[in-house]
Amino acid sequence: MFICNTDSERIILTAPDRTQAEIYLSGGLLNRYETVLRDGSRFNAVKAYQSPQHSRETLTGGFHSAKLSPFACRIRNGGYEFRGSKYRCGKFFIAGHAVHGLMFDAKFSLIGSGADGQAAWVKIAADYSGEDGGFPFPYRLTVSYHLDSDGLTVATVAKNTGPTAMPLADGWHPYFTLGGRADDWTLQTNSATRLVFDQDLVPNGETVADTHFQTASSLRGIELDNSFVLNGHQTAACVLTGDKLRLSIFAGESYPYLQIYIPPERDSIALENLSGAPDCFNNGMGLAVLQPQQEKRFETRYVLEAR
Image (cartoon, rainbow, N blue to C red; front, side, top):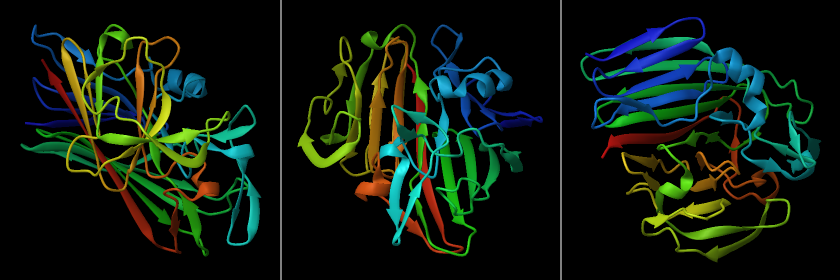
């Protein structure tokens, strides 16, 4: 029997004797996704916070597991033009550029949960009221986590609750670890194309062939902070493999881009599903426009397996 436990700050979804996921209401983030190893021990493949309070205090230090909305990665100088009007938004800036959206620290509310013999699930939601003058577009985010024998599915629905059209991109910023360091793992991606970035880590509109990770390749000595264009969605977007674990990520059609980043510590790797490219509010690559009351769904699935 699957189990769903909730309290005022977190939700735990459990598949008995197998996998478990922990979700924080603060930020709606995934803090644990663990499974049982061959030796019977449990391992969490998410670089985790110590507690919900720890996440609130340190989130902007690396944005681990942050929800990226209403834009992903960066907006150059925080500025963009939409429907003839110019805006400058940003809650957090790095090197003068707005990063990681406006909802990364939103307080989500529990709106539904349950468990049965096949799955455990939870649905949480948060509302953005348009308080940032550079993004005066109210909308609601509803995030669902669903744990079953096929893995952990994370689905986001964005609904425009305002009176005018709004621009939108969606993404996630999870950091994964398989034990040890990135140099000990291999990566395979379903991509042969990489976006070309300029010195500000913003796409310049060009793409380049990049087949390095079309077959499982070692990450030893590799530095990554790049966006890749996925080649369809019939197979895994990427597969990360270590000595004891394999993580496969299956992105829905709503996530055509995969951002990959290895931090300097090399103790984890960020594998970020994106609906739009970095700076898509300006370059239009993957940008969605929602009309009043219109919804858009984004979905990805994580499969964690012991080897």
